[in-house]
Image 1 (cartoon, helix red, strand yellow):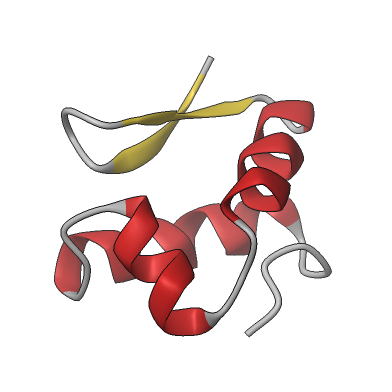
Image 2 (cartoon, helix red, strand yellow):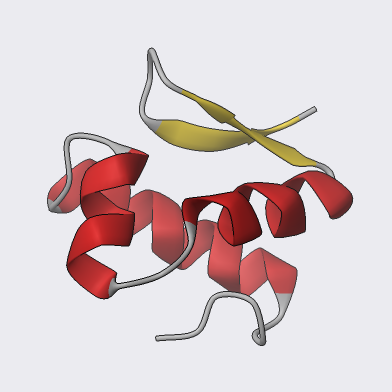
Length: 61
């Protein structure tokens, strides 16, 4: 699954669902899916979202 190439709203929904249901952290998700945490964080921030470690989800800034 390539979160970087999909519509940001769909990617936002899907990544938060995966974080909620399957992964205890963004690090776990990135390790398991073999994707760059830096790329994900930059992509989401560029599109108005930041990762909140306390709630383990992306939120709008």
